[in-house]
Image 1: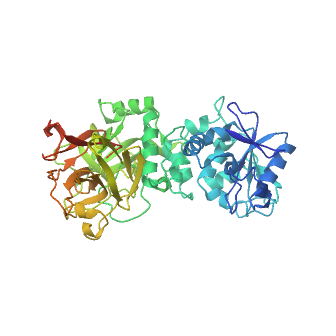
Image 2: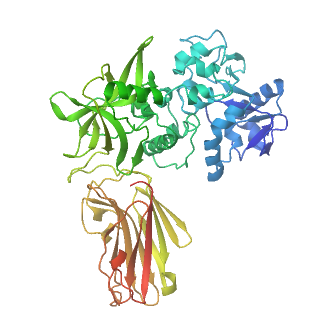
Image 3: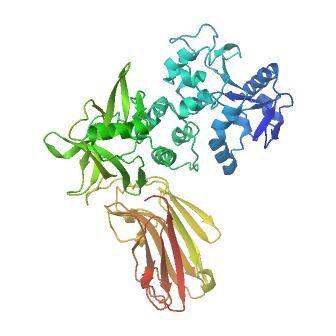
Length: 558
C-alpha cells in the first residue's frame, strides 16, 4: 500500500506498513489524486487543505504516515484499484487511528440527534459504513479540524443515527477478534440493514463497500450495475455461511405481490426492516425441528444455481391455497425481551407436481408463532421467475462475458475489417481475440434493422443483437460475418450466427448458411466456415481441410 509522509507530503510504498493514521471523509471538488500529489500545482487545489489538515493532526498524534484514499490509490491502474477496494476494510481496521473529517459541520459543540453532526452527509454514504465499523480508535473533527468526540464516547448517538449496535462500535464482547461482534453475533440481515438507504456515487459500490463487513472478496466490475454486483456479493457470503437470514428481506415497493420474484434481494434497501432478525444457532435449529416439526432434519447447506436456489426448508400450505406455502427460515425476530417469533417467506409452486417454487408476496416477512403442526421439511428449488413466451424481461446475469477466440482465420488470409456493437455491450480486444461484456439488458423498442450492424440478422423481437464481426480475405475478396446476441424468451441465452456477405463485383466460393447455436454457461462451441462448404456447429461440423473457425466460450452465470 502507499502511505503519505506527513512532513514531506511524498508517497512511499510498503509491503509491511509502519504505524499510520487513516482519513475518512466526503469527496468534494478538486480532490488531490495520486497523479497530483507530487506536482507543484497541488497546493493550489481545493482538496489540498484537507490533506494538509490530516497530516498536521497525525503529526500531533505522533504518526509519520497517513493513508488518504484520494491520493494513496492509483486509480489509473485497474489492479491497484481492485486491490484497494478488496483491502479497504483491512486497511481501516489496521490503522492506529482514524480521523473522520466532516466538512459540512462547522460547530464542534455538544452533538445530539438534531445537531449538524447527526445530519452530516457522511452518515448517508456507502463507504463510510465500513470506515465507521472497522477502526478501533476513531475521532470526529469539524470543518476547522476541531475534535467533536470519539467513536466510544459517542457510541449511543452513533447507534441512533446509523442503526449499528453500540456493541459493534465499542467492541464489547469482541475478545481477541476485533470484529467478532460484526462477524458472528449479528446476522447477515442485520448487517445488511445497516447499509439500507446509504448512497454511493458509482452504483456498484453499494455492494463493493460491504465486502469487508462480510469478510468476502470478489472481482470489481464497474459497469455491471448494482443489481448484479449485489447478487454476486450475496453469492460470496453464501459460500462461507449458512445464515438463512440472507433471505429475510422484504421489498419496500408495494404492488404486484403475487408475481414471482427472485429468492435474492436486489438492493441493500430490501433489508431496511430486518435489523431485528437474528440467526437461530444450528444446534438449536436441529433440536427445535426434531421437537416441533418432525423427524426429518432440515439440511443446513444451500446453494445457488444458474436457475435459482437449492435449499431444505419446512413448508406449510396456506389456508385454501394448495399451491402457496409458508417456508420457515432458521432465523427469528426479537419482538420483546426474551420473546421471539420465527421468520418465514411465502412461496408458490411454479411447476405442477414438482418441488419447484418461486417467492411471492415479497413485500412482507411472516412472523411464525406456532410451528407445531402442518410444517413438513422438503428439499426444494426456489427458481427465478418463469417467463411466458410473450415476456420480454431482463436477461438474468448482466455481467455475462463472451470470449471469442479466432482459430485458423489469419493463416487463411482472413482479418476482421468491421466490428459493430450494440449499446448494451462493451468490446475489448486481446491480440486477435475479443471479449464482449453485457453491461445491462437491452430491450428492443423498434425493429432490429434500425440498429447499426443489425442487417446481419433476420427480424425477430425475441433476440437482441450484441455484436457483429466482418471477416474479409483481401486476396479472394471472400467475407463472412459472425454475429452474437442474447435471446430473451424462456430458456433462451446467448447465441451466435454466421452469415455470408458477398461483395457485389464477383461471386464468392465461400458457401455459408447461417448457423444458430445456443450457448450454455462455461461451455464452448466451435462454429466453422468452410471454403466451398457450409457453416455448421458443434459435433456436426465437417472435417474438410479448408476451415476457418471461431470458438466462443461463455463465462459467468446465465
